[in-house]
Image 1 (cartoon, rainbow, N blue to C red):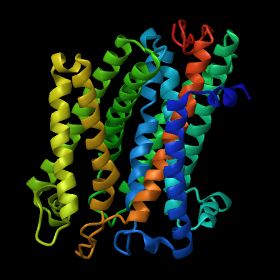
Image 2 (tube, rainbow, N blue to C red; image 1 turned 135 degrees about the vertical axis):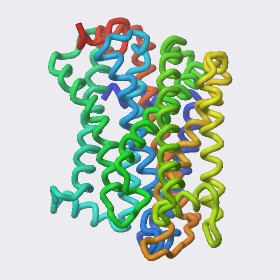
Image 3 (cartoon, one colour; image 1 turned 90 degrees about the horizontal axis):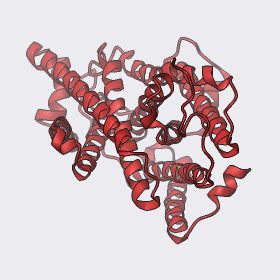
Image 4 (cartoon, rainbow, N blue to C red; image 1 turned 180 degrees about the horizontal axis):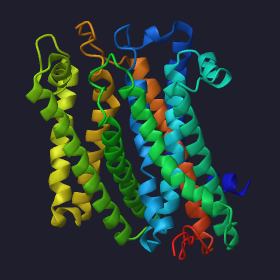
Length: 402
């Protein structure tokens, strides 16, 4: 219970922020109650566009959750001590992101009883079944690691030895959650936009850019609000990881564009035309968002590739923001909705999220922000108690690598 007790102590700013998030969540719950009564017809989705904002957010957040491995792997496996104060923040971010993924799947199902079908009638040949296994397993792994290591820090003792294989297992598991999610799309033969073997690598590259970029922003924000400093070395190293991941992601996007536009195969090129060049009768909203995503990607690469900009904290904040927004637009909107336009029969059905749909999505994000707030509050309060973490998140990392 000590974990919960530490989250219930805070000043006006802390409780004001929490109250604001509760209000947003309450508004989203009201809209969700309307969706339960009326059905998914309250959203902007249709027969031709069956996945919209909900699944887009799910896809993007799976990447944010998987990106925790970029902190866990170098710290726990390679003994990079600069990540000591950041590792627990990455794990809590992963827990919050996976929880949000589950919620977005829940609201997209329409009726809660449909979620039970996946559990009561498991189908091993279904990618949805394996996505449920990977997400659920990753959530459990991160929750166990965070709870055990943080409890050990509070007591000033080393965590039990059995946590070592759990941490090792979480590293490949993090890769699997976004790989399986990519297979959900690339395994659909009727959608040429997703029918590419490079989709899973592209998902991972974007994940390893967006998640660490968000973690950098959270670390800088924590230092300004609470004085908790993860260290400039950790932030600089993570910024380099974001740079490499963003370069690889841009390379993959250019490969997709070259293959489609050079081959001039209509079923392949039309999706990219709708997103980036425009076609008669195309969706204007997707065209605008697609171009914004590419522009932000270019700005992010410019700021990240030049060391002078990347090492300047203000410029790094801008670079992380545009990186996050660019990849959110790409995976959270364009990738999902763009795959439905045009349909296999050539129809273009415009999709614009409705206000209730937006409010429900914002409420899930607000709930995730509330989870991060509570988790970080607990972690920082434990550290302020003066305990030195014997292993995992303090001065001496867990000895996984010799």
